[in-house]
Image (tube, rainbow, N blue to C red; front, side, top):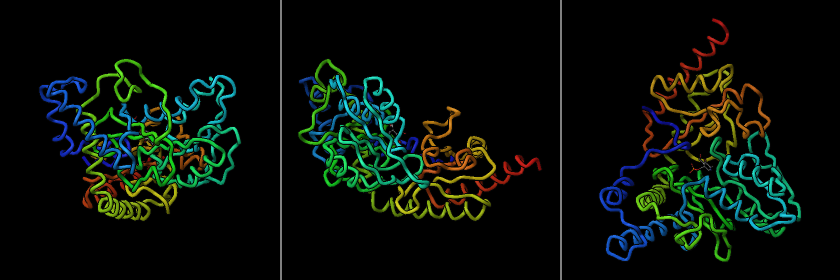
Length: 378
Ligand code: PLP
């Protein structure tokens, strides 16, 4: 299997599994227990909190563990508007946000929140915008999951703060792949997920800046500083910490290595598939992501054909694939129908090799040619 779908979910790294193992086998213990095993679990959670905080240049006290990026995004948005009964104000979101933001924003409109989408150009870059004076929260992702586009979060945060709004950023795809500093970027809150960087699925974190408040997500025993009650997922949190530490250590070497492989893949595909185009911002992109549109084929057909020869990729986004609906991100960019239909996403990871890239390119070119012939009735 040549796995080029790391943006959907990355394989659990062996080092991460080794760190989790003691908490999966036998007694994980309850981190609130006073006995030795309980204290050991608490210490492991505290240590993981430090490692996750370090990945984003933050103080560990702001890190609140939860079930993943979706929960963290939804928590941040709902908390910002909780209790605002009359005239809650405007929530401004980027047009390329993940459904975790987009669909939570849509749900908040039922509480009277006005949602404004900040438009993007044909490359998915944010177009210049002004914010309404009643803007309470701005949510713009640091890196897009479908295209790999990077956004100038510090500049957006400046604009948010200028109108007195808070700034939230979905760092799910950025953290561990590019250098992230919540302090330098001026963020008030940020969402993280473990399984995009070789950690386990079902674990993430919501970070809030010092002085910011957060509404309790789950009430109960008071875990996570009383903001998300429930016995902690010790093994998952430990795995998240291990993955964060590894990603940080490998960041510069891996980003250069994966960017070179990604560029090699793009060059081969553009040469081998007539009319193929790269989608997104060619200048400011995640090192591991390539989005490409193939003329005359359906992305789903390509994914299935490549799956049959052992190459795993995605159409625009794994989250919207299978829904039968066009990717809202590609639609917001105003792309041509064939580009939206034929969009493919290749996302690399630390285990991706040059040989895999060469083989994946050959398979992709062969599949595209075969499907193009079929669609032309040849
Ligand atoms: N935000 C972005 C940008 C993502 O790519 C994803 C996952 O696809 C999420 C949020 C959701 O994260 P999780 O799968 O941990 O809920």
